[in-house]
Amino acid sequence: MGPVYPARRPLPAAETGRPGLSAAPVTLESVPLESSPEKPQPLRVVVHAVKGWIERMGAIWVEGQLIEINRRSASKTIFLTLRDKIANVSVSVTVSPTTLDSAGPLTEGATVVARLKPSYFESSGRFSFYCDAIKPVGEGQLLARLEQTKRLLQAEGLFNPARKKRLPFLPRAIGLVTGAGSAAERDVVENARRRWPAVQIVTRHALVQGPQACEQVMAALQQLDRHADVEVIVVARGGGSLEDLLPFSDEGLIRAVFACSTPVVSAIGHETDNPILDLVADYRASTPTDAAKHVVPDVADELHRIRQARERLASGIVNVVRRQQEALTAIRSRPVLADPSATFDLRSDSLELLRHRGRRAITGRVAHDASAVEHLLARVRAMSPKATLERGYSILVGPDGHAVSSGAEIDEGDDLLAHLADGQLVLEVREVRPPDRHGGSG
Image (cartoon, rainbow, N blue to C red; front, side):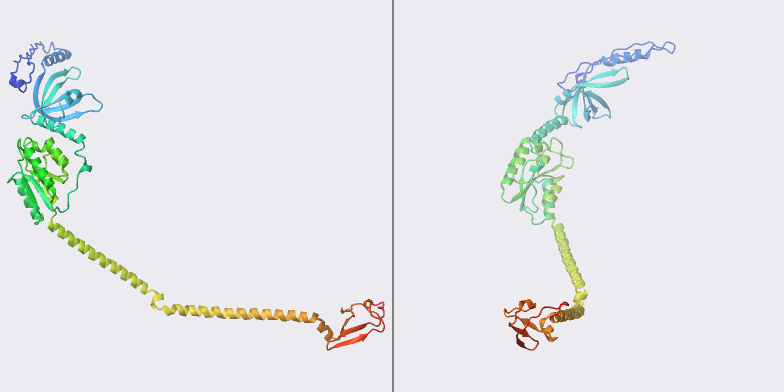
C-alpha cells in the first residue's frame, strides 16, 4: 500500500494574502497509489500523479521581497526571485513582460504581493511558479511610485548634468535649509566654521519630515534664492526611513530646486539614502558634514597651497636664473670672447699672406704683359717704314702725292720727292729705264 497524502484544509483569508486581495482556496486531495518491491509503480505514473496533485492547487496570493529581476533578451519570459522577509526561503517565479510592466516601475528590494500558480514539468521533474499578477506594497509601493516620478522628471531633462551649476570657490554667504536645532544643522555650521572661521551662514529653519515639510522647505529655498549675498544653498537633513525622507522626493520640491538660480547642494541622510533631490541638485553630498567640506574651502589647506605655490615659484625663478647664468658662462668661456684679439691676429696673418700673394701675382702678370708689349713693339718697329729708311732705303712720292711703286707710273721730267731717314730730296727724272730680265732696274 503506497503513501496517502491527506487533504489540506482551505487557508483562511489572513493566510491567503493581504486584505482586499482574494485567492482561490488551496486544497490537496489524497493520491492513493499501491506499490511494493514486487509490484512497483511505473515512474511515469508517479510523475503524472505528482503533476496532477500539484496543479490541482489553485492560484494563491503571496507576499515577499523582490530580490532579483532577470530579463533575458532572447526570451519573452522574465525570471523573478522572491524571498520571504522573515524566513530564509526564496523561490524562482516566471512572469510575462506585460504582467510585470503593468505593476509599474519595480526595483530589486521592493516588497510585492504576487498571485502564483504552481506547475510541474513531467519531462524534467522541475517544480516552478508562474505569476499572472503582481503589485508593490509598503515600501515597495513607495519605491515604485518614486521610480515613476523619477522617470518622469528625467524625461523632462531635470537631471541633465549639462544644466547643473558650478559651486563657488568661496561664497560670500551660504544658505542653509534644515530643521531647527537638528544634528544636520550643527554638522554643517561647525564644520564650515572650522574650515573657514569667517564664513557667513544664512539659516532658514523648516520642517524636514511630515505633511508640511515640502511647503516649508520650498518657502525657505525661495527666500534664500532671492538673498543678495547667498551664493550657494545647502538642504540638509539627517538619516531616516524611506517614509521620513519622502518630502525630499516630492515633485514640487524637485521642480523648485531646478528653478533656483543659486546652486543647490543636497545633503539628505547618509550615503545609502538616495532621495530624488540628490539627482536634481547641483551637487550631491553624502552627509551634511560632506556638504560643509565642499561648499567651504579649508583655510589651512589653502594657506598650505599658497605656501607650496610660492615655494614652487621661487624655485622656478632660481632655476631660470641659474640656467641663464650657466648659459652666459658658457658663452663667455668661448675663445672668441675669452680673447677677442686672437681672432684679429689670426685673420691679420691670413690677410697679409693674401696681400703678398696678390702683389706677387700682379707683379708677375705686369712683367709678363710688359714683355709681350715689348715683343709686339719690336715687331711693329721692324715692319715700320722708318726702320726701312734707317737701313738706307728711301720712299719716292710721285707728282700725285702717292708713293711710287713702279717705273711705269713715272715719266721723264717728273719731279719726285724722296723721303730719307734724316730728310727729303727733290729729284727730277731724266730717264726711265725698263726692268732687266732679272727683275732689277736698268
